[in-house]
Length: 269
Image 1 (cartoon, rainbow, N blue to C red):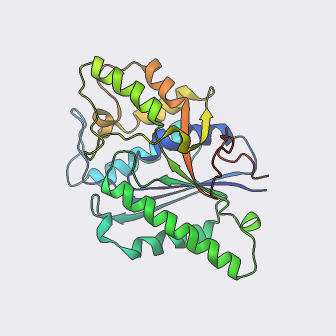
Image 2: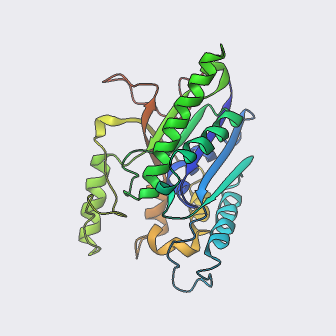
């Protein structure tokens, strides 16, 4: 069976916490193939102090950071699609975004697709939009495969996963954040992290290898370091955060009480 992994994201750096660990884990498997789509260049993002990017050139700057991050990780996407939509404006693209993601999935037929769920992890409208578009595109292409007499098991699109933060982990991080004087997250506010019920988490991957590379890849996104890293956090703390990867299984439907998977590809052979 194949091992094609697709990440479909809104902005450069969205994939950092979500999928770097799984990429490292499978990078030496000769069957493994990585494809990535970004809907925007992140051109409306903030610019961290000391980074010589300009407002006009931020999109190109962040693209370059993303390429450098994959190189630092040691595995670059075989295909990397940039749709070039306006940062913060994905909702305006409407049904066209579903069409574009469907074109990508139709061409690549990834076995596992990673994206955002309805909460967008941070509530960012772009995160929510790309997640919804990907879910719709995934089901559209699966339907096409079935109508053509193919089987998803042979033609990819076996699993759709939404990145998430388990509620228990969110509460622990919230306590540490308050104790550090950083202020509490408010899940009703955009850009504040959200947690999902622990019982909704269907994949929990624990990483022990490649954490240094994962951290180095994160640091390539220097223009966003002020939003990616809390002030005063040590490298050891951030590598500990990177060692855990969690997902909601959006497809196939997960039975209540089903065992939690320990790898994004588990059970697909």
